[in-house]
Structure formats: C-alpha cells, structure tokens
Image 1 (cartoon, one colour):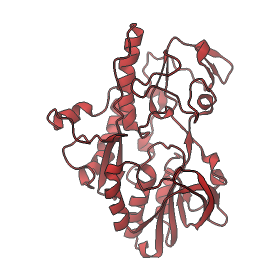
Image 2 (cartoon, helix red, strand yellow):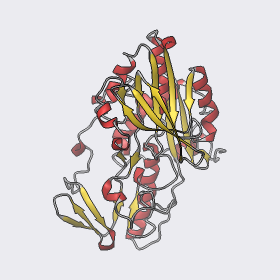
Image 3 (cartoon, helix red, strand yellow):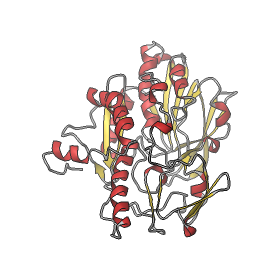
Image 4 (tube, helix red, strand yellow):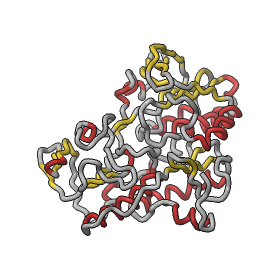
Amino acid sequence: MVGGGFMTLKSNTRKEKDLIHPDTVWIHDRVEKFDPKRNAVKLSNGDEVTYDYMVLATGVQLRWDMVKGLPEALDTPGVCSNYSPFHCEKTFKELNSVTSGNCVFTFPKTPIKCAGAPQKVCYYGEQIVRDRGYRKHTHFIYATSLSRLFGVEAYLSALNKVAREKDIEVRTHHNLIEVDANKRIAKFELLDENCQTNGKFDEIPYSLLHVGPPCSTPPAVRECRELTDENGWVDVDHATLRSKNFPNIFAAGDCMNTPNAKTAAAVSSHLKTVGKNLKAVLEGQEPPATYDGYASCPLVIDKRRAILAEFSSQGRMETTPLDQSIPRHHPFLMKRYLMPFLYWRFLVKGRWNGPATVRKILHLGFVPKK
C-alpha cells in the first residue's frame, strides 16, 4: 500500500518494544546457531540460551544478493521494491516519474513472502501511469518464474482477465538473475516446466524495474540440517506444525515448509494451531489441533478495487458468500483500513486467529465449496 501511495511508511511502522508483552524476556541479540540436540541456541555475542520448548518464527531473509547487481541497483534511478522498507516509498516516486519504455515487474524462482505483491504493484502501477497520461508510451511486463500468472487455479482466470484489460504482457518461466543498472537491462534465465534453467536467456531493457526478491530462511536456520528439509525450510508436520525430528519444537510463519502461501493471514491460523498444540504438549498430551492450510492475499487491482483471494493448497477458503474472484470495492477498503488495524491491534498481540469463525457464521455453518 505504501508503494501505491495509499499509505505512508511511517503509518506502517511501530517500535518493537511496544509490541512485545511486558512479561516477556526480550534478548536483544541475533541467533548465530541452533543446536536442537542440546536444546540450545548460540547468540552472536557468544552467549548460549537453553530451552525446554521452542517455537521457530524467524520469517524469511530477503536475498537481494542472489541477483547479480541488484543490491547496488536498488539505489539507482528506475529500480525499486515494495519488499524493502528503504525502497518502498521509492516505488511510488518511480511510478510517478516514468514517461516511456518498459515497466518490468518480477517474481522469483524461490518461495517468496506475499506472492501476490509483485503483481499488485504491477496492476495499480499501471493505473498510476495511465492516470498521468503516459500509458500509451509505456509497455508493462510481468515476468514470473511460474508457468502461469498466479499459483491458485481458482483465481487464475480473473487475474488473466485483469492483465488483458490492462494490456500487461505476462512472460512466464522468467527468473531474474542480473540487473545492469548502467545499461538499464534486466537479465532473466528461462526455465522449463520443472522450474530448471533451459540454458536460454532474455534481456529486457527497463525504464522502471520492480523486483520481487528471492527469499530463504535466515542463515542460522538453513545451516541447521537437523531442523530443515533439503531446501533449508523448517521441516514440520503440515497438520500439527511440530518439528518432524524434535517433538519439543514447533514453527509458525514463513520459515517452515508447509505448502501454504507465505502471508500474514496464514500466520494467524498458524498461531491458533501452535498455541493449542504447545499447551497440550506442556500438559503431557498429544497435539490436538491441525492447521487447515489457510492463506489469503488481497490483490489490489486499482485505486478502488481488489480481489480478496482466500485459499489453501486444496482450493478456495473464502470467508464471504460472494464470489471473491470478482474485483470489488469492499476488499480494497478492507485492505486499506481494516487489515492494518487487525494486524497491529490483534495479530501481533496474539488476539487474532484467522477468519474461520467468521467464515462459518457467514456461510450459515456450512463449509464453502472449494
């Protein structure tokens, strides 16, 4: 929302100390190493902290370094990213400065947090440029590593329609590997159907380049092979969110290998599951709760409308009885006003466990069809 000029960065910022419960012992340091066999973590200052139980919620690391030239390019004209607090306001400035040429928006080969964000900025960015009167002089390109525009089939047709109506060229199987800021060229490796490089490349000149960065778990997590799968994500039971190798460890959020999209909405359901299961384990019982796979992504289409995508890996999990694949005004209002309120007042305080109860009420107790 900051990159589109709908909100300011300051309004989306809080002091961390104001969000942490006063009864919590806050260790002001970074974890250097996990040692789950010894129930210990080593801090960067050399201290060691031991535990009886641990919940891993490290989130992801934005891997700007995985794209050659990108860290330096972010501070050059034309290059921006809503994923960086240091560059998200720059996105709005660039969208209000571009007058001609290619406007390129990228989606990486790795898992990424908020997978809808790279195309949201493409959609509302197109309207900003159009409203300024420069749309006929610009060419919008959405370059994604995926084989299609969006990973959830239920919303694919609606989003393809949005891209067609906005005259956005979708280039699939494109993975950004290099940015030449001096020449203003973005270089992509082309991928096959298995998301592996096919040895071919595509170089796209840009006037504006918005990058959805590759993501991974932080170094301390991905280097602990006992905790992670072969790709470096915390290896958990997808139902209980309990570590497959260590029964006293649970995980929540983007750091684990559950098949859900990595969104804040998913975290709300994670917290509900982990909270119940950790309490049960502390009482000597087996974990009773299961994560339903819920995730959500409000896809802002323009300055008034959004598609409220709610789903699991199995299909739709929509809260309202309406067809949420249709762009409407009320999801935009929810994204702009309600969701920031829910996030700061409830989610980070542990008071919001997702919309499952609301969904059941609005559907009169019936489970909506997927």
